[in-house]
Length: 190
Image (cartoon, rainbow, N blue to C red; front, side):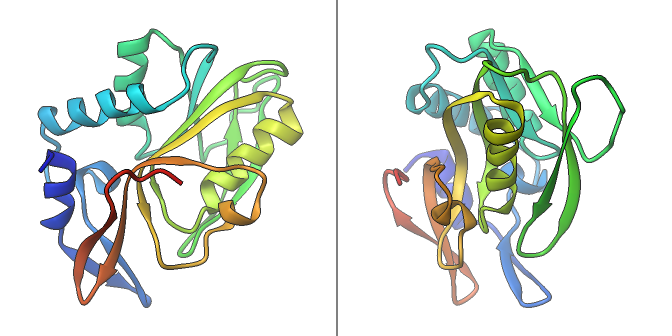
């Protein structure tokens, strides 16, 4: 069994306002992220994602940053972080992110019309973040979305990405059943 699957099966579950989620180093920064786990995930992303024509990796702050930084270092593809802070820079594009438990205004800088991008995130749960980012990149900026990858997909609830024209590849799909993480499928392909 690989480290990602093992670490998910051992992940603690917490409940906040009726929403059950697992606490994992990739999605939460706790417990401590072991370099071997990050390396395994980065290798899997590089094998799974369409990277040949990608100009930029785009990731939301904050928990996509460590994964995307590692992928950027291994592929020499520049990294753009979608921030929750407005800087007022030329070309900054706002977007509204709504998840199952939060909503925020976010901002994209340094992506231009015609750029080919990989959108990369830690967890796909409600699809709110990835849908908002993809819509802003595609419709507002005019970038080409080459691929969308999330490390972990939490299944079992409504996923806004499923109702959009965008789709995501995932490394592993999980559900929370009776207070434990269950691996739903081996491949994680949607």
